[in-house]
Length: 216
Ligand code: AP5
Ligand code: MG
Image 1 (cartoon, rainbow, N blue to C red):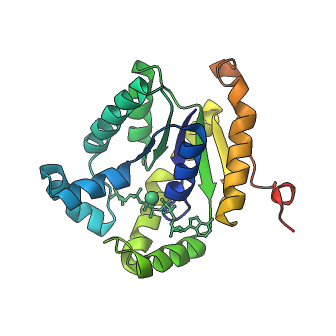
Image 2 (image 1 turned 90 degrees about the vertical axis):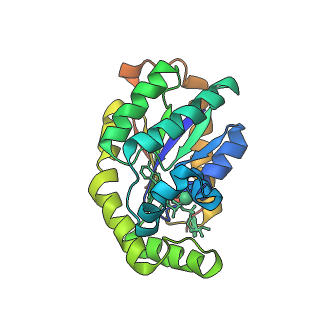
C-alpha cells in the first residue's frame, strides 16, 4: 500500500499515518519528524532549517525532496509500501515527487485528504502545545502554518482528484472513527489497486458517510 497525505496542521497526519503504517506494515515517512530530528541532533541540515521550522515556513523544496527520495529508496528495498506524511506541500513538490516515485515504480495508490475546520485544528495544536514542546505550536505560528496550508498546499488536492487517486475523509471525528473509515476504504481498494489502469481511477469522497461509521 502506498499512501500520501494532504492535510492541514493538526488534522491527524501523524496520528493516522502511524495507524495506517502499522496496519499495512509499511514505513511511516514523516518529513516534519525527519527535519525535527536533524534540528535536535544539530546536524548541518538541522541548523540550516531550524529558523524556518520555528516560524512555520516551508523549508526549500530540494531539501525535502532529497530526504524523501532517500526514504523511498529504503522503502523500496523493504517491500515498496509507504505512508508519506507532510509531503507534498505545494504543486512543485507534488510534480517532483511523482517523477521520483515514477522512476522507482512506487507512485502513490492513494492521496488521502483529511478535512477539518481551522478552529478545531487550532484547538488541537494548542492542546498539544500544553503537553509537548514543538517550537511551532504557538498560536501565531499555528495560524501562519494554517494560512500557508490554505494558500499553497490545499490547491494540490485538485491535482490528485484529477488523477483519480484522492480519498477524502472527515477528520473532525474521534481518532478511532477516522481511522476505521480510512482503513475500511484502503482495505476495500487494496485488491483492485494493481489492476485499475491510470485512466480508470476514480477519486472518492467519504466525508458524508458519518452515519455508516457509527455517528448518531
Ligand atoms: P509537520 O511536522 O508536517 O507539521 P504540520 O503539517 O504543521 O502538522 P502537525 O504535525 O502539527 O499535525 P498532524 O497533521 O501531524 O496532526 P497530529 O496527528 O500530530 O511540518 C512541520 C514543519 O516542517 C513545517 O512547518 C515546515 O517548516 C517543515 N516541513 C515539513 N514538511 C515539509 C515539506 N514537504 N516542504 C517544506 N517544509 C516542510 O495531531 C495533532 C494533535 O491533535 C495531536 O495532539 C493529536 O493527538 C490530536 N488529534 C489528532 N487527531 C485527532 C482527532 N481526530 N480528534 C482529536 N484530536 C486529534
Ligand atoms: Mg505531524
